[in-house]
Image (cartoon, rainbow, N blue to C red; front, side, top):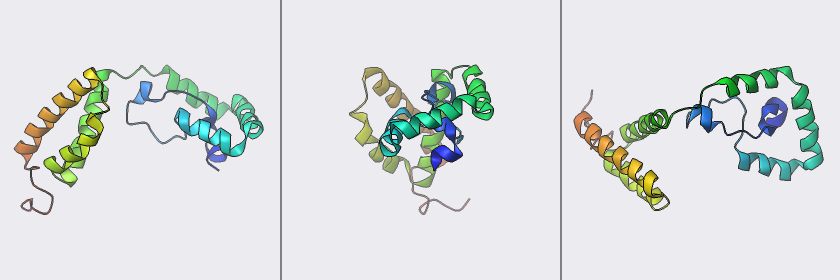
Length: 142
């Protein structure tokens, strides 16, 4: 059903290079999702949809626009991640967020781990300055 509504879903493209973690909901899929769909609907059906996409001007225009965008910078991606983390922290509290994130730290490489640690220190200070050391229920009314 997804591919009927969003035939762009058959196109393998790393949308994160253009949008970072804030990929708009236009129907594009991650590579592993496309591979899963191929298994579910079969190669013949998948190829039929691919051939339709090649002649679909709406899909081709959307893909051309996406490809024309500049690649997102690492700094912009880090800003997106920080904003997402801030939103999570606002809903819980800093220490609960930090505990939740600990399960992912062991999977990080040296450079990624360094970026994570910088983010944690920034967010620790931000949370302290903004009263997010306490959960939503523990905070005074604003």
